[in-house]
Length: 400
Image (tube, rainbow, N blue to C red; front, side, top):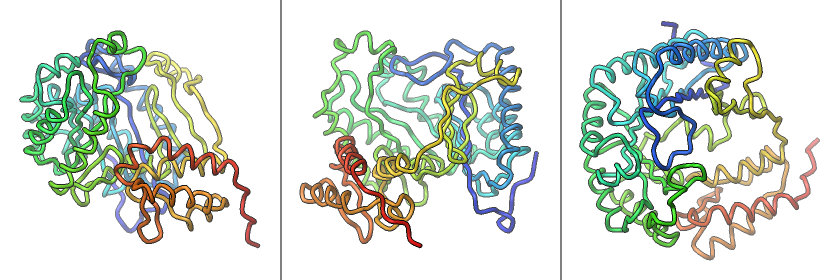
C-alpha cells in the first residue's frame, strides 16, 4: 500500500476523488442513478476493476501538485461490490495520487450488503466514513420502493459499522413517500434519531421519468408540495432540537461532521470522477463520463473516447454557480469574495437578498448572506432571480 502524506509535505491544492460503482442487487422503483441491477457478473467486475485501475493511473499523472483529501464511493451500491474489490481501488488511488493522512474516505452502503468482517476490512483499508441507505423505518414502504432490506437490517448495519470502527456515520432518509403523512415522517425521524448517527441526509422523493415509479405516479398517492414542505420544516425543527446543525439544504450533522467531500461540490472546489456517469471539475474544465458500463470499459482499454461532454467554464458561468451552490449551504454568499473572484457587482444581488430578508427567507450574518430554512424551500425561485440580475450586471473595472 502506498504512502500517506504527512502534514509537513502537504501541498496547497486540494482534490476530491469520486468513484462510481454501477452495480446493484436490484433497482429501486424511484432510482434514476446509473447502475446495473440483478447481480455481479464476475468477468464484468474484473474488467471494470481493470478499467478503473488504468483510468486512475492515467489521471494521477495529470495531478502531481494536488493532494487528495476526500474520496467518495457512490453508486449503484458500492457495498454490494465487495470489500476486497473496494480495497483494490483504494490501493490504486494510494499508488497514483498523493493522499492526505487526514483524507475522508466515504462508502455508500445498503444495509443488506454489509457484514461485520467486511466493514472491519474496509476500516483497515482506510475507509473512515459510511453512508447507510435507510430511507424509511416502514418495511411495507421499503418493499413498495423496491428496497432490498428491512429497517431491522438497517439498525444492524449501523451497529456493525460502529463495532467495525466507523466513527462518522451518515443515514439517508426519504420523505414525501406514497401515503406518507407528516406524523408518520416525524415518527420515522424519531426512530432513526435513536440510532445516534453523526450525520443525516434527508431527501424529498423525486419521481424521475424513465423509472418504474414514473409509470404509476398518478396512482401512488404522493404527498403534494405543501405537505412535502411541512415534512421538510418538521425535519428542520426536530433535528435542530436534537443538536444537529443544518449546514446544507438536505444535510444535517453534529459539530465537526460535515461531509467534506460534498462540500467540495457546493464550494466549487476541484474533483475528479471515475466510472460511468462520473463528473469532474478539474483545471477549469467540467466533464462527464458516458452512461455506459461496457462503453467505459472498452474506451479505457482501447484509449478511446469515454467523455459524454467536456467544456471550459466561463467566468460569468462560474459566478452563477457560486450563487446557486453557495446558497445551498449555511455559509451563503459574500460580497468581497464574489467581487474579487468574478469581477461583478454584488449590489444587485444584495437588493434581492434584502427583499427576501423582509419576507423571512434570507438573513445577513455579519458579512455573509444566506437563505433561511423557509428560504431554502423557495431556493430555486430565489436563485433564478439572482442569476437574472447577474446576467444584466456590468463587470467591475479591473484594478490596475
